[in-house]
Length: 158
Image 1 (cartoon, rainbow, N blue to C red):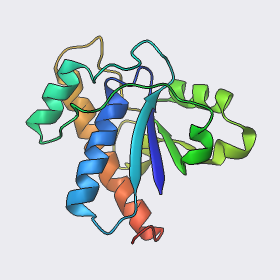
Image 2: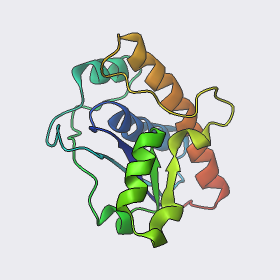
Image 3: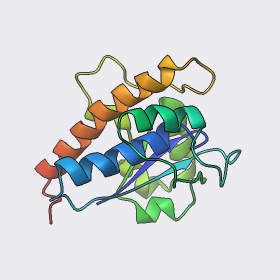
Image 4: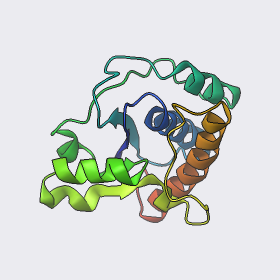
C-alpha cells in the first residue's frame, strides 16, 4: 500500500504526516506493508526541508523529519499511490482538479481516519504561533493510528 500525504507547500503538515506514519508503522505496526511519501499542491518550497518549527515540534515527540524535502504533486502520483490523503478540503479540491476522474476514489481527507476528532481538517500552522505545530501533531498522530488500523483491517499486512 502506497500512501501520499498532501498539503499546500509540503513543509509543515504533509511531511509531519509522512514522518509520523512512517515512525508509527515501524514501531506499532511492523506487519503492515506500507510506503509513505508527501507532496504539496504548490511549488514554492520545492527542495526545501520541512519548516524548522515543524521539525522542532516533531523532534520533541521523537519524529525525525530532517531528511525530507518538499516536492510538488505530479501526474504520476495519481498512478503510483493507492491512497492520496489531503490535509484539508482546499488541497483535496486541488487534487480532484488535477487527477484523472478514474483516480478520484484514491483521494480522501486524512482526518477521515480520525472520526472521533472534532476537526475534519489539519489546519495550516505556517502563519500561526508555536501551538499550531503541536495541534498538527496531535491531529496527525490520531489520524495516523486510525489509518494504520484501517490498513490492517483491509489486510495490507506482509
